[in-house]
Image (tube, rainbow, N blue to C red; front, side, top):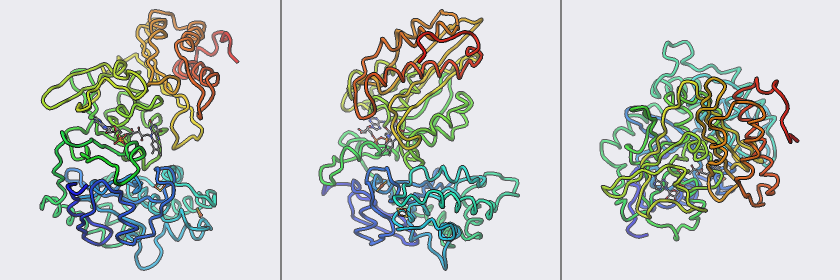
Amino acid sequence: MEDSPRPAAFILNRDDVSTSWPAERMLLDFLRQERRLTGTKEGCREGECGACTVLLGKLEGESLRYRPVNSCLLPMGEVAGAHVVTIEGLNGEGLTPVQQALVDAGAVQCGFCTPGIVVALTGYFVNADRWEAQEAVSSLDGNLCRCTGYLSMKRAVSSLCSALQPPWKNSRDVSPAMEARLEGLVQCGLLPGYFLDIPRRLTLLREQGEHVLPFDPRESTPVAGGTDFFLQHRADDGRPKLFFLSSREDLRGIHIHDGVCRIGAATTVEEMVRSEVLAAILPHVKEHLGLFGTTAIRARATVGGNLVNASPAADVAIILLALGATVGLAEGKKRRQVALKDFFKGYKLLDKAPDEWVEWVQFPLPSRNAAFHFEKVSRRPRGDVAGVNSAILLEVDGGVIRHAHLSVGGVAPVPFYLAETVKFLEGSELTLEVVSEAAAVAQGEISPISDVRGSADYKRLLLRQLVLAHFLTLYPSLAGKGCLHGAP
Ligand SMILES: Cc1cc2nc3c(=O)[nH]c(=O)nc-3n(C[C@H](O)[C@H](O)[C@H](O)COP(=O)(O)OP(=O)(O)OC[C@H]3O[C@@H](n4cnc5c(N)ncnc54)[C@H](O)[C@@H]3O)c2cc1C
Ligand code: FES
Ligand code: FES
């Protein structure tokens, strides 16, 4: 890895840092081994426990944004030009309100999880427009506590949210820019004073071009959020040379044009959750994608990574299959498109040449009378990959299903498009009998295998239940119109 590009410079807490650590190595190791910032803990090293949580502040255009991320899955190449905040970087004169509330509520036992929890919770207060206990608790969805101090943590969060008001509460600007936020956050002691100068210092770094990573994409493996990649390439010395897709602004964003909605491949799940464009098309997108991973994973995981990793239960892939999506691929100057349902050829086998990139994915805007729904069943309600998941798009007119898409994950080697069931549904009347029969057709289309996420029979039963759940959620009046044949 001698010729790896080097992260030129970044800000670590209060300090300007310049390092020769390879771009492919993990920030967690740099913090603990090189800088001896051992407040950031190493737990699972798989993005599951949150002990290693830090805040990553990056300039996006003219605005600064901080995100909680798992430093065990964050390569050094991603921190160039950024502000990295560890637990040590939150310390000021005394305890911050977050630290004090956790102590007061008895939420600190062995303390191993505490730095990650303080950082994640502070990240919530930095980003949220309103401070609400339930949302603040949800922001800890990626932080495990082995001493199970969850109830006391919830008490701490409640008391914090009652005691603190966002300093911008009475301002006309309900969602002020980060610079204005920082002032308020420093005033109420949530952040130390040095944060006020960070926007200027980051702008200076950018002007000096210190954050630019001169990779040649033809010679390197693309990595986007790294939330799959670094689980599969654990050893530092076994990693290929990387190209960081986050540096490609042109691969990000969600736009509507000529009747289609196009999502850049490097758009993160968090950006999808927050997108007003997407919410106007899919009103429940926040709820549906809120089931994806954890806050820190959503901040990094991308659409392109989800499709190329091609896990059979990949949530974004399942949602996009039911939207009738098309993938845009690029290789040098060559461009081509492929229907997403034809993109997945077999287990982790794609209609994609080794040097081809996913540039974007797009789907036609659903008609006004279309309805969309997504269901996910997993062992844990949050932070877990689905056992079985499914999505549906239905256009019903005059009581007849005119158009349908239906997908299911976790029951086949690929994210699966239920083509036979779609054929059966289109042109059928919307009745409970048709729904019941559709569920049976869907069960006949799949041959699940038993694995750690459930037996084949269980998955088959789940698919039936999810098909029923789709229809009964979208058309609740169906429930009063007869009984379901074969319902358990
Ligand atoms: C704790 C945890 C929880 C998770 N929970 C979920 C979940 O609930 N649902 C779910 O679906 N997944 C989940 N995942 C899996 C993962 O987060 C997703 O699959 C994610 O979308 C991958 O995106 P990424 O940007 O991190 O991909 P990366 O890891 O960066 O890349 C994955 C693969 O795709 C390639 N690649 C990435 N972008 C492109 C591109 N544009 N063109 C060509 N190749 C590309 C990379 O080379 C790599 O081979 C979870 C992972 C973890 C660690
Ligand atoms: S060490 Fe567990 S999430 Fe990073
Ligand atoms: S206090 Fe011990 S792990 Fe949370």
